[in-house]
Length: 431
Length: 157
Image (cartoon, rainbow over all chains, first blue to last red; front, side, top):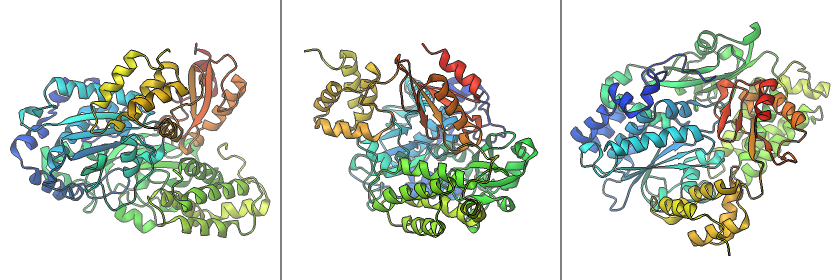
């Protein structure tokens, strides 16, 4: 059954407490004090400055500076401004945002309220993926409670600031996690990403200035307002402050959610917290940040989990979803699953992505079946390279990166398939 | 002529529309509400929604076809979707799907002849630490093996 996080810190400290999900329980733990302080005692630019000074980076995958993003919102737009919470968590291997909503819904709402005040947004749209029905129910209940208490609405927390929150459910499309795909979907259309510029701060939801941040990003904000930028900078690394939620899955003894400072070594997460590989087996490879991020081989687990270190290993933190594969795993099979996903989820607007994801999957499949051709690895590299940096959004890049990672570190798996004309990994996970 | 949408559904759609700066913003919520009536979106409901949103039925249809969770044909009374993405596959998700296909006598994507269950596979549902797992309608069933999964589907009315 679903358990609370194994290792907690400030974000998840009270997640085992059922009452923390209610307004009364959250308030008893000091909830909404930070929002009260921001909305009543601070000016919007001061809040933005504080978040900038804290060095909070977006936790949705790209790691962009949150305070800087907020500062892009025009101060006097003369038209409505919106905040959007990206709760479309769909990156394979990631489940942190779901738990943040199911177990800390008011923590998220408090972060939204502070973010809305800082950016001058009159309304927040929370776009949650359609499959997260339970989380949507918990969050809607929290929104209703917050309205009833006067924390939202015409006079939020008695500050004179008006704010409304609208929860919208998606309907099953990975691309709606891309921020402009999300905006299209929010407007009732197919979730096909928009060309940028204009960026959402100029032309966002319904054509109005909009800031889009991820669930976890907003959830950090009340803690920063309450305890200050210095406190936040004291956790994690100099360039990547704070904790994050690492979701560990795959062949480990103890999969689960671990809230740890950014910069924690991957080996510590895999071997100490998740207790290593089950059955006493060795690790073969680890995907460090959700399926879009290139895999690392077993001899690179010393890497510290923050973008400044992961980039040196040609991968990234992404959404912190760590997938561990044991020594029996066939990396061509892993590639078949990964490329199927991207082929299936490509929105089809850009040729490089629509055609490229199909070709990658087709070639992986034939290599796995033992029907690979001599030049297939060169074709894979060529297709992947041509999918990078050419398209409207980063989906195409995200489809190419894991393929490049597999070829970089596990080329011999592919060569064995080609030579033996079959999959030689008989004890690997089933395809 | 019978209205394709129940009065309560129409009222709830109007309430959703009031929350958005532009009417069309409420199309996804409206599709969820309309689909909840019969479990799918027949052409009459599509036309009714097109009228409400003042758009052409094909524009409603193209939104329906873009999203996995909107259905333009009848579905089983229950949806059973097994996650076959990588984290679940590493822990036996595909074996689980194959076991259910055999148990129900249908392939993924098909509905049992009695209309009880539509079986499917799904991409990552965000429960990777409790793999393998499946979604039964709105509920998540986690930490499964074939025996547990079969018992769950056998318990569906």
